[in-house]
Image (cartoon, rainbow, N blue to C red; front, top):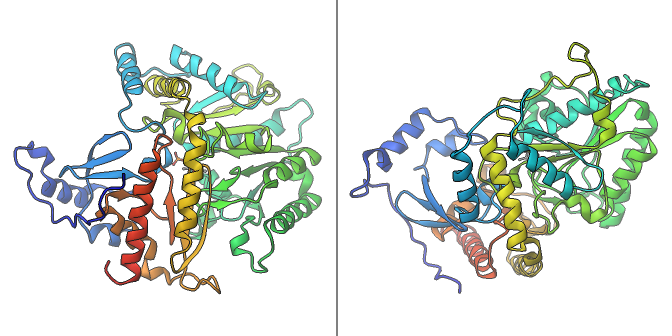
Amino acid sequence: MTPPLEPSLATSARRSKGSAPELDPVRLAEWDHAHVWHPFTARDWWESREPLIIHAAEGVELIDLQGRRYLDGVSSLWCNVHGHRHPVIDQAIRDQLDRLAHSTLLGVTHPPAIELAKRLADLAPPGLTRVFFSDNGSTAVESAVKMAFQYWRNKPDPEPDRTLFMTLGDAYHGDTLGDVSLGGIELFHAAFGPLLFPTLRIPTPHPYRDPQRRSPDQVRDHCLGVAERLFQTHGPQVAAVVAEPLIQGAAGLLVHPPGFLKGLRDLCDHYGTLLICDEVAVGFGRTGTMFACEQEKVIPDFLCLAKGITAGYLPLAATLTHERIYNAFLGSPECPKTFYHGHTFSGNPLAAAAALASLRVFEEEKTLETLPPKIAHLRHRLERFARLPQVGDVRGVGLMAGIELVENVETRASFPPAWRIGARVCQRARDYGVLTRPLGDVLVIVPPLVVTIADLDRLFDALEAAWNDVREGRA
Ligand SMILES: *Cc1c(COP(=O)(O)O)cnc(C)c1O
């Protein structure tokens, strides 16, 4: 059932009766504004409004201090999988807490990391048997970049000229400087230009923004053609190609034409270089299969995993590779072949226990088998949304979708950024009980995999109502 669409136009924060003083919303808001520096958040926007303070959660809902409930439309930044406070995962973390909260993987080891490495190697595409743990998506990719770079220096017949990375336009691979070097999002990355290493850039295969409006297949072939020409010029210097498989998340949910990933793999093979697949966003069922690269039968040389790995519970990441790469790092401690890279909380036991529990839930609840009807319904609701005015494009893979709002559907001209259309629609959607975070004027729909058809209706009904309100001047 779809709940009624009355905005609950809530109100200035008020001291809620009987709550502990540390949960006083007015004081918390003051302290937040005084002390918290929020990631990826424009200050003028944040400081001009009352903060939404999330205090609890249940299933696919987040609950604020005043007890209002919001459907978690972006899975708490694309990482929640089985819902919040899942009893199996909660219990696994409690059980682990009774034994060991943290011990390092530098020079010692522990059962949750060992077992998780085994499980990931069994699940991943064949041959990716070696698991390097870290603690977030940025470090998962940064580790792969440094491993690939060092591999060419370490291997028995070294190729030290392979120092260049080839990436996609609009790429986003995280926020460490190596990842920012790979990145291609002007707004996020331009400020750091002088600090970055140079990369080779393949245009993003994004048919909606193709100036010549070619078909998806033509756009794919064009972009692969550019990649091929880059290889013809720089082939022996390419250390690796780095790409998000199937869909580029932070770039604005840009769906690649079918065959693009396979084409990249073929080029890497032909020119003898490595492929790094950043599945930080798309791994763990997000696109309908456990890993996105499975859909094009591609086996990368490095598979980078984070966000969904603990079902959105705790920070953890993994970089998987094959034995040929690992074997190039064989050497005594004083020899420079060792991978001198790692993080204090790499493979933390609580996080690894959560990840193992999540994989158990995937099996017990047959999560992947439940997805096709939800994906079909999401498609249906996207197509319905596309019939509203000023909707330029709707696109997605699996349970990961975007709705691009434009000023002019014919010319595909965007709204002036200062109008903050996407942000205003999402702000309004909160009044209808849905929490989502846009990427510019692209509305983002990345719900937990455990959502029901009714939840999807609630999500889309709220976004439709919010878009109508903004367009018609009511919000
Ligand atoms: C989120 C994301 C990252 C960075 O992960 P963090 O955990 O935020 O450091 C890297 N790559 C992709 C594709 C992502 O979506």
